[in-house]
Amino acid sequence: MDQSKPKNVFWHEGKVKKEDRERLLGQKGVIVWFTGLSASGKSTIACEVERRLFEKGKLAYVLDGDNIRHGLNKDLGFSPEDREENIRRIGEVAKLFSDAGLIALTAFISPYKKDRDKVRNLVKKGEFIEVYVKCPISVLKQRDPKGMYEKALRGEVKDFTGISAPYEEPDNPELILETDKESVEQSVNKVLAYLENHGILI
Ligand code: ADP
Image (cartoon, rainbow, N blue to C red; front, side):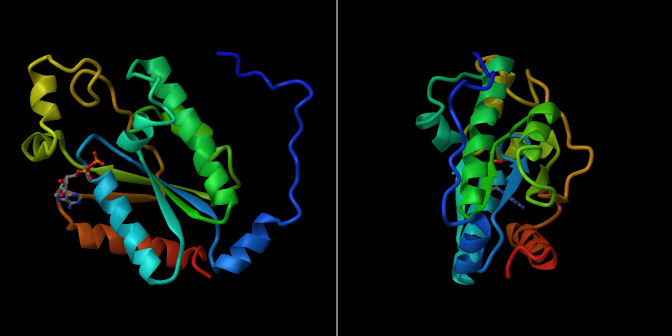
């Protein structure tokens, strides 16, 4: 795919700025990027953070791996190239959401460091909050809510992260949630506290 800059296509500045929308919403537009193995708890935690923020009168929106693969990215598989393109598109969408002033909560395995760092570099410092949802594979195999680990271990799923495809742990995530040790509520509280303490909720 040609990812060079298109010629004769210019960024059109709107009349309402990001800061104006942020003031309207009483929050900073940021990306909270949940990364981790399948079944580690990314979607569960992201959805609960969304609900808790909504209760506080804050607008967040979850971009979820499976849902995006049903629509925007339904042409992509799980090869390294497709995973890279999957994350690139999601990063661009999350950037637009954050530019709209929303708290974009993304729940994607996003196994490659390089791809996550590219998204980090799309936005200003402080606007990309990487949350490593960490859980040992032994616990995930027991959880296995979709039966995917069992299938992957039987060799029925190709390129399954953690079994037959790599996962690169973040070096310096803004937050680590250890979901084998903490409850959903404890993890959610940690995310909300981070947002409070870093001036995201105005
Ligand atoms: P992912 O989005 O990372 O693939 P999901 O959120 O879809 O993961 O699934 C995680 C599963 O683990 C859910 O069935 C959830 O109820 C369960 N679970 C058990 N303990 C926790 C915890 N402490 N945090 C998050 N999820 C947990």
